Image (cartoon, rainbow, N blue to C red; front, side):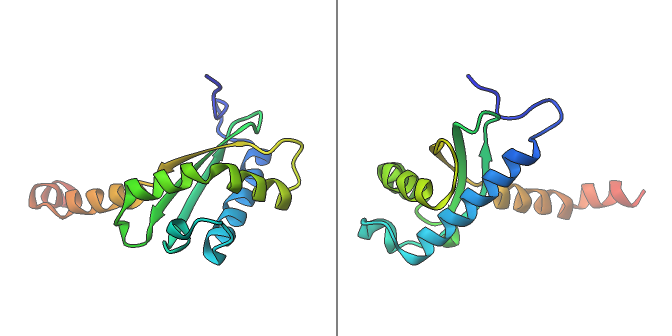
Length: 129
């Protein structure tokens, strides 16, 4: 397995390529450029794209609007990843277009859980001391 980051974190090149892929994919999904009506009817947020150090694999963190139908979104994106990869390859000038892997973006769920924990009386009491 290829490590996705160095011990000091992702490099500038990884961050730049990841952000370029994120913006391109967000635009493609927003405009409905995919030939799949099931995918085009959904509003999908592309939260982050992490690219391996060799730029061969891009892990794309997505979340459907409202958080409903998460499993369906991952299946639809996986079903259309060849077309998405071709579009990204045309729009992003890279030597190789990375393999696309889709995962649910759980950042918002973790933030909600953190807020819930901080709202507990026991935790608030400990923080005030």
